[in-house]
Length: 479
Image (cartoon, rainbow, N blue to C red):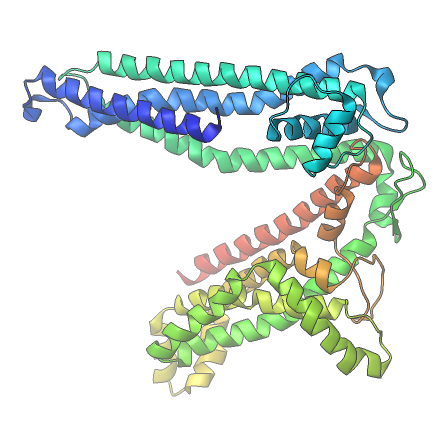
């Protein structure tokens, strides 16, 4: 049974518990809702929540624990001597999972020879990292059987728990039951749980990066990582002559982000000033949504625009005639396109901040004889400046974390160079490239992605904290 069907059945059980609990409450007072402690809907909601909440919690925990348990079971029974030369158990388990998924998708029988399985998987488009062996096929069949059995247990356990919860809610329902209090406490718990998800997710991301980055620094000197000017990973073996200096990647990241901000900040700020101070209501209602459309365009579309249009245009019109380079992929290409992408971030935030400046400050300046432009330049912009700086820093964080525009517009060369028409790359691009493909997850060439991610996280976190500090200082000063 698929998860979607299980959800539909749980919804049906919850609906039944809702109706039965509500009906039992009304029946206990001979249909006169005025004699109930709570409104009838609260008794129904109590039945619904009691039936669904424990069942969905069990389902969530089961879906998290089940793959870990199956992986541990299959790994424990896999013969170490059957590992391919130069391979690891983690890489083999990737193939085991692919084979199991492929057999499930084809609804293949349990008894299959290696040749039959290879033919079936090949026709299904399943690509393996190594040649399919008897041991891998046996492990895949064990994985498949264990997953099927545990899925059956999961469905039974979740449905039984939902039925027990619904029955218990119906049985304790009567006219004196304080259903409203119970439901409100239950909803409060659900809201707290929902609010905690963001905090726990952030904590999990940070801890995972710290843990894996620590494993990386056990195998690679942190001084070489932070101060080396060469990025040259090698996948010939564990740490096989790799040079993993972050400085070229940081330079490319900051260089492209700087050009993007040079484009986005003036255009976005001037657009915000015009929309908030000069534009009429009709033009503003049309222009602001048109500018904000830029924020809804997928970054892959910006990347294709950089690759097909902006890159060749800059190469043919500027770089080649001036002898600065012959590549369509360059820092300038990615920076210009990323700057266009950031315009709505700067414009919308700055517009809101400028509109928040008290009208009394405008009226006072105009009353003293200042012109409109003088009022904007000497009163409004200085009053809104801390908020504008915060908007710019948030846009900088967005630029630093961008990937697709850099991949298609700036290339993948890690170098320290001042020429903006040369191809360079960023930290985010190398994180993707280091984790792409079947690589040894324990090697420094793969673990370096977590060190890069942690470094980038610290930089963007610092920018966000600085932006929040500036905005709070602004509020304290002008409120």
